[in-house]
Image (cartoon, rainbow, N blue to C red; front, side):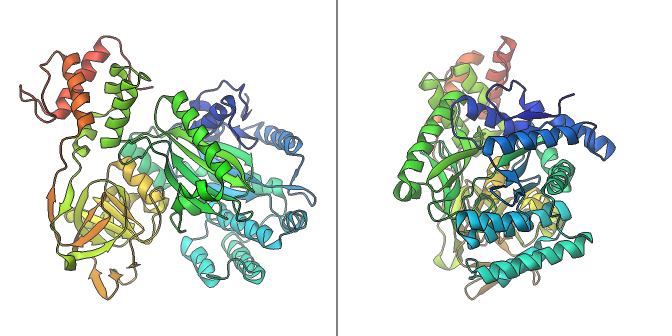
Length: 556
């Protein structure tokens, strides 16, 4: 059995074998878009590992051969003392599970390789920053060092991140944490680092957060994850480098405008974690116009290929663009309706497919409620609306307290930022507010996927989990206090404000008219309840049932 596949345009395996991430990279290759070279360990290897607790027979030899091929393609050596190769090791299930499994970046940057990278690039700060990023992800994902211990290291060098001495101090501290947790130092053998990282990614399929996410989204538990290994491109190289995420359309509204975030001089995890202050995507047009033009062309090409809104993760190094991931946008609510209708009206898809693309249960989110008539003194804070809707509930400052308090009624989870470890709290909460992060941070992406309102980057918000309270300016609210958030305006208010539903959506009206025509019902003048008393969800469901009865399949 072949366990490993190259990331080439000729690969014919499905996402069930390659995982969604690697399958998307193959598509990018076929479309001629820039993708770092690499290979993928398929999902079958993960399933075998989870059954036996060890790598399947033959995987070690295939992995060594794949690394040699990658070294030849890049003319670099993994962990080498000259022209060192560093790689990313990323999970990728057949179905997208954003942030739920492990990633290790900059793997292969042993002490000698780090010195070689510094000499090659003439930049010790860059090399040490890359080494620290490797050690931090290795400590968290491979060894299991707690996030609080790693955050303490980050706090110790806050404001000195660019100083060589501070980076060296942080490196020694993380190395010490790894030694204390595992009883062993960080391997100086890059091949050993890779073996351990692959096993960590396999094991992350069965973490509690991944199981919770699968249960919420009805994803089978026996699929396993693939492991994608690629040559690193360094968004932290210099100020002409960076990273970002982009949608071909606004995920909140469905409008065809590029939407996303960018971060200069940093690597990808800094964007999606929500720990760093990002800029709006259009800043690329001003600072790196060639990258901007390339990104827009890629988004147009991908939307044409997928016949849907698309999401990409990208990095640029010294002004050169690389695409690291692509998938269909998977919008919900108002955005899903608008995209389906506009694609049908443009002739990209037919009306039958447009009707099948929208889940009936998402129609309740189309008439997005808004907070109205708020007294100025009731506004606790304002941030960025990241997922439309209004949530009213009791304050919870940790995922555990959200899960506990939700037994007594709705809660709103407030965090500095969220991570996959907060998944059970996000599942229990009616909405989420974060002090940091942008509209494509972990909190925003997960909230939109779950159809829950979210506000991110809330100004001045301090979450004190130890004391069980939140503070904004001179105001303190304890856990259990009643608040509300508006995921459109970004307002967070104290108490239960007046809420009104948005006006009728014109795209929904058109979609329901098509649904009534398919189902053989009279066309309605407006969205809402039809002339024969059927609610919007029932009208769409009836049309979908009629389409499937005549041979139309579900959305591809």
